[in-house]
Image (spheres, rainbow, N blue to C red):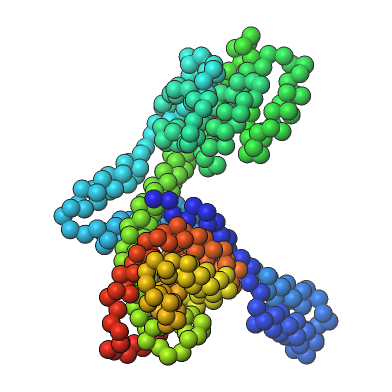
Length: 453
């Protein structure tokens, strides 16, 4: 299940408010008053300090995005929190095996210890250096696990970095020259936080500097100053691997870095699985709420688009969604987010599009589809469907954030709603089927009044 694959919104943005501008002005006035009237000192360093403090406070960014832990303990805490959420979703005896498997995955990462693991890898056609010479060149007081990995294919559908290489503490990619497209693709997949080097073989001293410049110009920036050169004609391995040998002198730091990388990947994988469970549970809430809203709009005598936007913001649905995504936001913040998404959906013509589409299929479902109240009710149901999905996307993006960034929401709402509307249009036939069933089950006269939140 692919979720939020096209959404990539910045979650940390600078926010300049009027209150901070007032603080800057107050800082200048206060600084001047203290210098002249209290300390009787002409303007100088203290005034600059107050001014600098005001400017810093005015321009400092307000962060509301996911902040990755910087320690193993921090990542363990995050992972255990996800395990608790899995348990809350799955529960029962049937899920015990899954919970045990996840716990074992976590313990496996935490049990990682010395010796350090180093892998040499190349794509098909590349020649790895002699293993015994490499062992002698990088040998030190600490034990090492040195492995020669199987060649990477020149053609691959997914270009996924193998797990066996991802788990290595250090990596050396043996790069055949001239540079091939497949090698460039594999190098782009090497994790940024994995200590890695590129190893090339080049015998000619006279042209090496030009060759190195040409190679670094083609490689991603991260490989600058990370290219090692060996000569087939000389046994200069020890000098070549000096940077690696120095790094290996810090085994605890290297293994700790690997643990964090593995925990980060594990956390991301679990979050993807957890998001699938959330979406499955959300579908039932979405379908139930959309028809509750449709019934409420049909019963209302006021044919207004504003009524639709209010109907969409259903308090019960929002509360249930907050529980699904373990969202601790205040109720008023949730209402603001939902209303902003509803306004964006109406501005993008979701109501008009759904109304025209319903008119297009009216002939297939009888004259009752032509009733204005029914069309308005079904448009409200579809609007609820789109806004509900938009709300789910926003909660997924901001999972773990203490409070939503409403300024960022204003900028991102159109794109979030557009993505949600496009996804819901894919299932338009399913909505029509549900709508037809709702019409057939709807009583001719409403027997109860519905209060909209």
